[in-house]
Length: 375
Image (cartoon, rainbow, N blue to C red; front, side):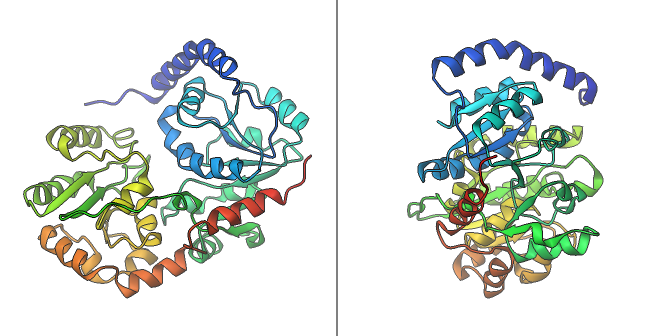
């Protein structure tokens, strides 16, 4: 199965965005959602295929808005603007023109602009002098994308904790470590406790294949069928299958595999929208090297980590919490659910996250964003 060539796909996406513009502008106007004042904004230039990167911050910025910070979302794709209208009450500014965006933000005196990814179009926005440019990213992990030289372009980079500071200083040459601000994971602050359940609840959340061999951390092709088949066959488990939303975007084999698994195990597909809430639901999480694994650490959810690549997370976990070849996974999950979070996993939580106290990470982020004066 051949994937659609990237240039063709990009042309199609631009056309879809163009078609959506008129109705989106009308919806913004009719709902009185046009951004008028903003102390800080989330900037997002991508289409809906990457919307999950922005969406994980929506609840956090809604809480910041409720605390009195004037917050908005700036978008350059009509389809993503529509998703914002559907998923949050935050006001938004939609425009293709960086000049118009700059003019509007300057008029508002916006003190900071926040970025949730490493999109190339971030660098067009970064030319705007005055506001502080703050990189947030959309997760904590040891993927190679987390140590990009692109971080140098921002005034500040918010990171989860000491592990990220060490990682960036070790990997990015000539980096000014004073720009790193440890805030923990604000996205995890608003989660609700799960209800009691008589079965062992297992979340299998593999990451996607990445856009290069160096970024392929996914267990789905090698172990997905084996994991789901073993767990689904055991009535002691309640299983949720949550593949990364971009799975199959860069690999025909991954696209075919995830389609088959979604079809064959449709009854296991995770019904929970928020990824953090999915982890809170679980008694045991099976994850690849991705933000889901590290969030499991922060939330004290017993973790089984897939993948053979060396990392501080993999090196810090007991061998019983490493997937290996997925043999006997049902017995291992049962044992881990019974024994609970290991002492070594708890130590990793302290290393990867500046704080896991409820509400503290959101407070740290809010304090940073309030420190920037209007421009």
